[in-house]
View 1 (cartoon, rainbow, N blue to C red):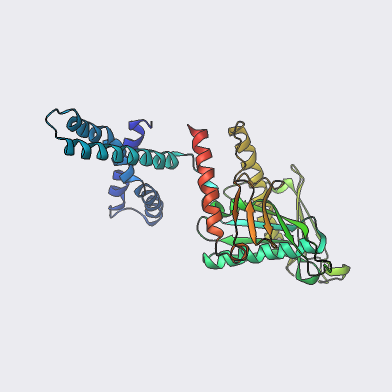
View 2 (view 1 turned 30 degrees about the horizontal axis):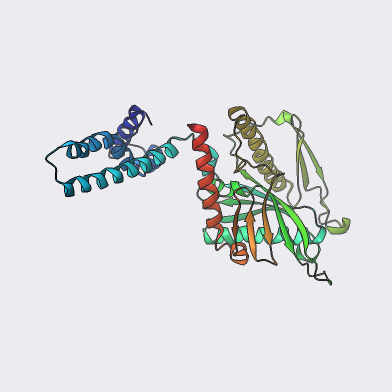
Amino acid sequence: MIPHKTIEDLIKKHSLLEKDLSSATIDKKLFAEKSKEYSDLNDIIQNAKKYISYEKDKLEIQKILDDKKSDLELIKMAEMELNDLKVENENNEKKLRLFLLPKDEADKKNAIIEIRAGTGGLEASLFASDLFKMYEKISHKKKWSVELISISKSEAGGLKEVIALIKGNNIYSTLKYESGVHRVQRVPDTETQGRVHTSAATVAVLPEAEEVDLKINESDLRIDVFRAGGPGGQSVNTTDSAVRITHLPTGISVSQQDEKSQHKNKSKGMKILRARLYELERSRIEKERSQDRKSKIGTGDRSERIRTYNFPQGRVTDHRINLTLHKLQEFLDGEVFDEMIEALILISQEERLKDFN
């Protein structure tokens, strides 16, 4: 049971925000902040009010049941009403518990997605390319924007590695479940015997970090510049425009050479480095907070095999929640992606509620 004072404080806060927002003197920045807070509270305010009135409403129905003058039909109606009220109260409590769970501030951020070909040679790079195309289609459907940061191509149109920034509303809260090893089972175009090969690609999803999220001291960085090289060692630039940034305390290193400008390469490199350092710090804090958590959903463990795409059987399976969708092509086209993500979010929430109780 949630303490009534906690719920009453939510209702009181909602009323105060309503009053503040109706003020003619409130400035634009504060108005935007309070509007978001008010909107979030607005989603559960009716649940909160009904949760508070539950005991009183239950008592009123119980009076009818205890009244010896009540006829059988009235008693039957009261019993049904009492049962409905209990079910409604359980649902209200669950919604309120979810709302009261500690928020992950990164959920509302943009996301940097890194896809790397893993085991499987050329076929793995082709699969990495398929995954990137899938995320592009999902982004297009959701009206998110995709900004390419760096790309390294292989033969036959595959990708050794691709890093992109995806912008929109609450991107990280959706894509964080994609971190891990994605495995593909299919017959490669080069396979003459019709044998099914297994390949893999690794996906890492990081929340975009702003300068205010993480302070990086210039003295902690070593910046090397060098001449950008193309496929087969050929030079793609005659100036030292490529940049390698190393964060000395952690040893994390980022190389960037896609742009002709050294300044632009450094800027893109810093964006990736900041995101990786921010995620490293978030992981450290999360580990301290939840030593006993057994959940693997949404933890961002890149070594974990999370999903298999089986082409011969036309299915995609998420191993964390044992969910299989026999809609592989629709999934790759971004049509049923939400079906998988919603299932992951639901189970993740249920696990968090168990930890919270």
